[in-house]
Image (cartoon, rainbow over all chains, first blue to last red; front, side):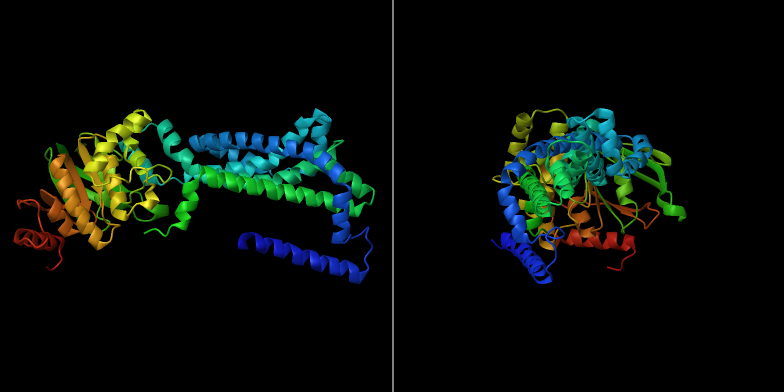
Length: 253
Length: 240
């Protein structure tokens, strides 16, 4: 109960301050709409918001799945090959310095208005945290454990499947949670660059039309979706890796 | 039989520091089915000795001959995502046993080692002594003729350690193997070993090799145990 109460309370207080400020300062609603104006925009436009959430959600989910696949495979490659690690880590880091704002319209020029350029943008922002956290999980296995397995005549492959990969799962989940939040921002950039639907497109249109309350409502939906993804991943992690949580809760030694 | 002759091992210093000479001209022979307890101060190359026996390192000079050896590291290092039963069967799984067959092999040992009822327990649900027993079983079931035990009870509290020493002594009496047990606890060495080998501070070499003829099970209060303990401590340079 307390776990839910605190964040809800924090949001309510923030909204209260916001509402109070808008009322007292008399700021133009085109510049800063009040929370209750955003709320009524949410309710009035719920049909439009829902219709635009669907393609965005699909892009995000496919993008994260693609990023997870590429991210895990890259982490494994970098883990197994010191040469690959030295050769590819710098370009990987460089890939994160590419401004998405520049890349997204280029991808539209190259690949058109379909799903593919959006997937690439989302996967590009999402795969990096997954690579980094998974790789550090793979490399953090206790060296004594590796020695123990060597005396059991364990092959490199056996050691990977039985020990290294399971050890890296908490890292993979940590990376996926980061990716889930970043994916939402990526999706907005991708859709603004060239799309006729989706929340990013809606944001583009409402901002251009000075429908500030509607734009805020769109951002609210995006944020809620990010929280939902994050919560689902946390839940999945608790299900899939019960030992991570049980160990923390048990006072050992 | 393990034969180590004139072995030296030096590690390069970290970041331009002095190289560390872990072992110098060390010779040691261990007969089959004998338990040799190696004692010495911290950092006298005991772990290096075990890793040489296990083939995890090569000596810089000298020769090491040993039948295949399985290691039991200082910390239990049980895998938190596996049950106690599956942890104990890890070596069997690595050797290609199917899951159920490995479990069937491990099960009778759980009864013998007083772990019945904890087959499905996760490592964090086990006491320190139980974890160490599962870890020992995991090494034993690797089926190697030599067991290399690296301070197996160092992390336990004194009471549990005493209990586990009695337990290990009995387990080794029933399941004869060639054992090299490394410890910094002289009493443990005398209680468990057929021989106690005392290493000098770094660089480690053998300064005393004491046969322990006392009957088993040994008590720490036995006159012979007390006397041998004093001898081993004297060899270490500690006044008794």
